[in-house]
Structure formats: structure tokens, C-alpha cells
Image 1 (spheres, rainbow, N blue to C red):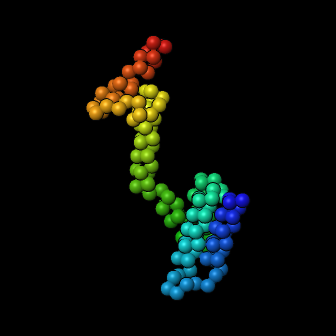
Image 2: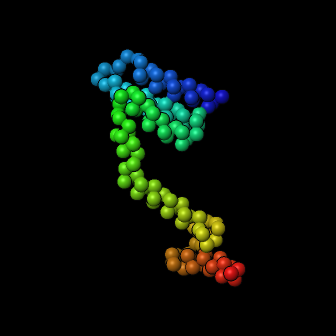
Image 3: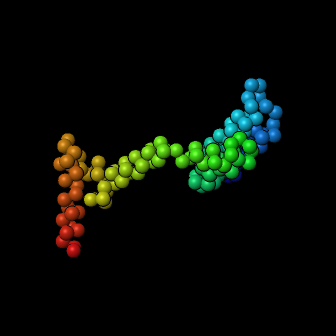
Length: 133
């Protein structure tokens, strides 16, 4: 029920932005982007569509609404800074779930010395891998 309400709310907001009267001092493109923001927020919060599908909505809406062309829209998604942030997130995710222990490195290997904590975590699994060869 919540998903269908979120889906409908988002679509209505975008259609109102596309076909509705403009607020004072706002361009048509700006109003369409505001409607798109409301659509995406409603769909993300209610998970009306999978998050990955919702994230691709600007690729469809912005070029077809005439706000940006497809190349400009895609270039906003492929910024080097975004890849830097994404890479940092992957490294953080990988280091929080330790390869060595199969569990959380921070919870099972609390030590004031970072090298000692890493060695304490990795030693048992390194030993097990060496003996299984």
C-alpha cells in the first residue's frame, strides 16, 4: 500500500511540475527538476521501485523534458569525484568485514595498536589457509 502511494505521489509531483503553472521566479526547467526531486524522494523513501531503477530516472526524464541533453546528464553521473567517493566506500566496506576473520575486524580485534590488531585478526585464518594447502 505504501509503495503504491509513493509511486503515485511521485508521478503526480512530476506531472504537476511539467504541466502545471510556474511559480513566480522559477523557470520551467527548474520546476521540472524540483518535480523530479520530489518523485525520486517519494520513490526512495517508499521503495516504490528498486533503488537502482529509481536512480536511473534522471537519465530518462531530464533529456525527454528538455532540461539537459543525454550527454550532460550522463556526465553528471560519471564525475571523477563520485568514483573517488565510491572507491573509498568500497575500501571502507571491505576493511570493515575482514578477509582474515570473516567477521567484523573492528569488533573482534580491538587493540590500541592498529598493526597488532590486524595481526591478531589475520593470524588464525592465515594459519588455517596455510594448513589446508
